[in-house]
Amino acid sequence: MSSAIDLESLPAPARRILSADAPAQVRQLAAKGVMPGLRPADIVTVLCALILDGEKPIADTALGTFSNLPPPILSGALGADLPEAVIEVFAKNYTRDHQVIEKLLRMPRIGTAALERLADAADEAAGELIATNERLMLQNPTVIEKLYMNKRVRMSTAERLLELAVRNGLELGIAAFKEAAAAIQDQLIPEPTEEPTFDDVLFVQTEQIARQCSLDRDEEDTHERDEEGEERLRNKFVPLYAQISQMTVSQKIRRAQLGTAAERLLLVRDANRLVSSAAAKSPLMRENEAVQVTASRTVSDDVLRIIAQNREFTRNYQVKLNLVTNPRTPFSFASRLVPYLRDNDLRALSRSKNITGAVSSAIGHQLEKKQGKER
Image (cartoon, rainbow, N blue to C red):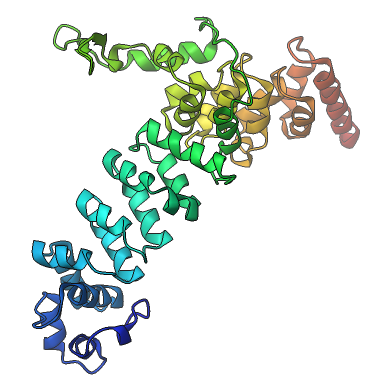
């Protein structure tokens, strides 16, 4: 039997059901919820013990019963002080029931594991319920991380949680936490957002992606009324760069972490370096994006430095080549990658006028070294 639940705290009838020598028929009936004389809290605790025990098919039957508890049993159990392990089973199986979530959050023995499960699965309403309890958030910073990285959680909720963490000196395990915290603290005055230029590689690629979206303006109304009754253009008809330009710095940073490839291709070249760095650090960025970003000469040296330090990306040969040839790549990073380039690329670059003098010299030294070995 699972050691996660203290059986000694249960009444005698419950202990008999869960004892090692209990008849199989008694355990099967218990798995179906047939436990005469037990209170709702004890019934769900026994069901959880059978689930956690993992003994099939009893555990499967118990899980089915637990997931569909009758309202009187469910209500009675949620009004009691349930063990941490039982709360965690609730958190795993009632992720869409906002009333259950609200009651679980009030329980004194709710643990980090249950909170993380709820945060991972939260929709917009559940995310707001969890985030409202600041005491739990401060005691369990990993839950703030889960909510921040959950795309379904409202932007305003994520910003509020980030501000709570920064205000209380917490350091979160979010890839772009440093940039997000700086944005919250107003440590950097945002530079004016530059107008996109259509000859920019990344912008053109983003526009190409946007054109693939099928929008029939004859069949679908392009406008809607807001809460104040004013007519406004629907978000899906607003160009992507226009949507992004209306965001605050902290909103851009979160979008850079969780958004689409098209959004990252724009945000990685944002005039605010906090935003562009956050896009480069996004856990969702893939190799093909890194190839596109390192080929652009409009991204900042910070972005190229971040990608150059990412071992997953620098395993890709084209990324290495792009970093060496991009004049914005800091020399210390570009020079380290020169020895990994193929001979034909080294010879072509040695004649190129589009690379910096320092990199050209490093390439020359590399060619001399290779020629020396061949003699």
